Amino acid sequence: MLSPCPNSPNCVSTMSSPEDKRHYMEPIYYSGHPEKAKSTVRRILGQQKHAEIIHEDENYITTIFTTPLLRFKDDVVFYFGSPGHVHFRSASRIGKGDMGKNKNRMKEITAQFYDQINE
Image (cartoon, rainbow, N blue to C red):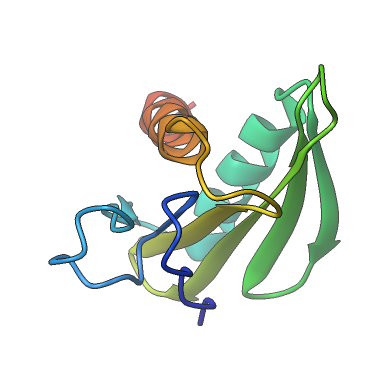
């Protein structure tokens, strides 16, 4: 499972309530073996300039994204424990707002996932 988002608008999660429009995003859907989904996420993260995988186990990939200019850190966790779904949570460590950065990042990663899953 993933930690809930705080009340601040600098977090998105697929495990937030769908009624919580500020924080909720749809999970990434896939068919097939979870390891293929996990390897696709791993490949996408490897293509990100400012991402570093800091932990990985059977159900999770934990990543830190660092902004290039001010070196702010965002924590992104992917959860693979629900068959057919990649759940995620992306949150800024500091501040209240993020100008939509976490939501936009996860939209981009989701789009890349759907482009790459069958490669």
